Length: 371
Image 1 (spheres, rainbow, N blue to C red):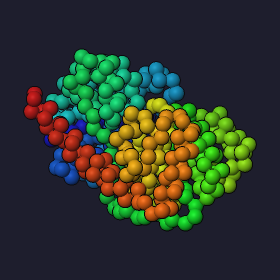
Image 2 (image 1 turned 180 degrees about the vertical axis):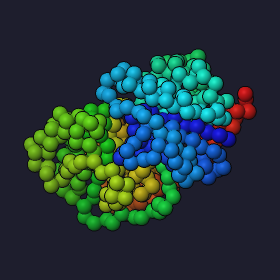
Image 3 (image 1 turned 135 degrees about the vertical axis):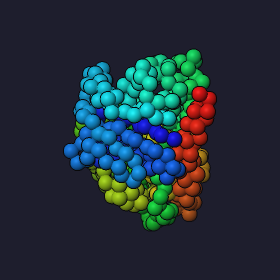
Image 4 (image 1 turned 90 degrees about the vertical axis):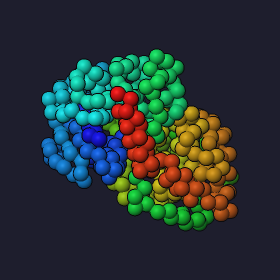
């Protein structure tokens, strides 16, 4: 098959700094090529990347994009020129895979046999713009179900295919267990992440077990998607309760090897989100290191964790639930229970890029056969 991907106008591809979605797509296109398909990716120009190149069998075409704007409406209009620059260069293909809001404009042009759109953080009502597309993909069942309720007339076009990570060159390594049990959060400092419930739960747990620690890693400014007022609240919380030796707030790590090493130095990965999740990429990336999980029981999070096997769920926003689970998993890890190997194997079987790329290709072929 001839597959064309059109990415958004804001971020370079392959990912240069962060960018979980672009990292995910990079793994998928590499696997599409390995499976014998011809892949072209359109993305915005970037100073460190060539405007045209073929790399690892993937043809890259880069046209002038635009910087991301905080206002969603303004950001959309700033990306319209990028769409038309892509349109001038695009060739007819079997599959057109769109990863930007402007993709619905392709409905009016004969550029492919099959047109698909992948939902990331799109408002679900606006998916009606893609009603002439053949498929809309979602990263989690809960988000897909939500869209079906909002747009029942399009439900036959909706399909869940989970996010994925590349397991190549990853092998399980058991964490070193000493007196301290270390917890790690990686992500934005924003209210949707539920960090205050985690901090409050950790404070209570520390009164019972002084050998537990929490480290948080994420952008410390608004440009990175964090809320600076929340960061100040969390820092004040640490100071007011004299938790400096137990809780550390730190900046982002964009280097993959460095971040993997940081995960390896911890025992438990935490995700206390209270809303806004699809299928969290950070948890998937930590699963291939093989670490226990404590994550909130948001519907979108449910596929990530097997209760009591890879870790535990905590009630959304419930600091007492976090307190109890922190102590429970700490005790079990010290006693020798190995959540990590279960997490590693579960992720490899369900969320590896090889598994997920096969699922996409099979669905592409099914859509083509229907035409």
